[in-house]
Length: 257
Ligand code: URA
Image (cartoon, rainbow, N blue to C red; front, side):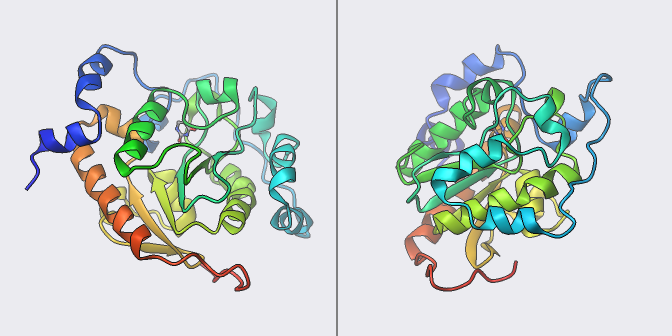
């Protein structure tokens, strides 16, 4: 049976761990800690999305990969386009078997237009390496929100709902063998539940027919060292699931979640 040290070594975390304790807090944290840190100058909640006849949703559901990023960039369905610098549509191998879904871009992602490039992203890259994959090699990385919420606050339900068609389209285009929901925002949106990560992890869920495993958000893991061993267990479950899964048939319509 592997010890905790073995697990952390396998995740490639042991040399970096000491360094990180001296670093500033990560840009993005999980819901509770982010909610607690919302600054007083955050703008008022975004207006509800305006797609009364569903035409936007239908259009997004037909987007090709090559039109996807430009469409996200032009989106004004919630108020976040006003405060973000760059939209962050997603990155990776368009033929990937693995889809990782996080919460929303943080400051570094907002500046670069790529998901998970900050401190949490470095941990995610280590997690991917431990699985034998890499950003852009059999992996696609996306977020629930494609635009940064001011001060990294938790996504508003209306914002997540406005962005949902984009994530749905990414899943439909990719047809991954597995989705890994990183943290509460991703798990809540994809599984339409308010359940805790602790209660959702450890088993295989389904999103539109695609197997889905829930684990802790890397930003949370940076602050909660003991839970890294649990995250490793989740990744092992994910790896077993990928090994056993067939790719969804493109001819079959996605099943309703
Ligand atoms: N946290 C997220 O959830 N997504 C990112 O892209 C970066 C940090």
